[in-house]
Length: 172
Image (cartoon, rainbow, N blue to C red):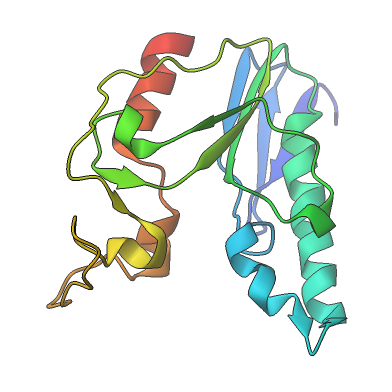
C-alpha cells in the first residue's frame, strides 16, 4: 500500500495502482519458468541450471503475490507446476474438453473463497492433446502445420475461452 493505493507490477515491469481493495482477483501469471513442460530445461546432465532456477524463483515470487494478496476472493491459473519450484498445492485441475474445446491441457487453479469451476460443455469425442501445440489428430498422427498458430508460444499460453467464460459466469 502506498497512500491508500495498492500496486502490482505486471510482467512488462509496469506498475498498476488501484485505490482501495479489490473484490476479487483472477490472475494468469506467466508460466514459462514454473510449469512441468519447462522441467526439461531446468537440468543439464542432472545438474540444476542456476540461471533457470533463479528465473523460476522470480516467477514463483510473482505468482505468490497474487495468491497472498489482501483480497477475499482469489483465483490463480497456471499449468501443472514443477515440484522443484515449491508452489502450494492447487485447489482444482480442469481440462479444456470440460468447457467446449476438443483438447487436453491440464490447467490448475489455486482458489481462495471461490467454488471450484463446474464444467459447462463436456466433449467426449475427438479430443486431442494441446501439448506440442495440439499437433496430433484424433488418431494420434502428427498434423501438418500450414500457417496454423498452435505452435506459437503466446497462443499456447492463452487460457481457453470456454474456461475463461466459466470463470466469468460462475464467479461474478
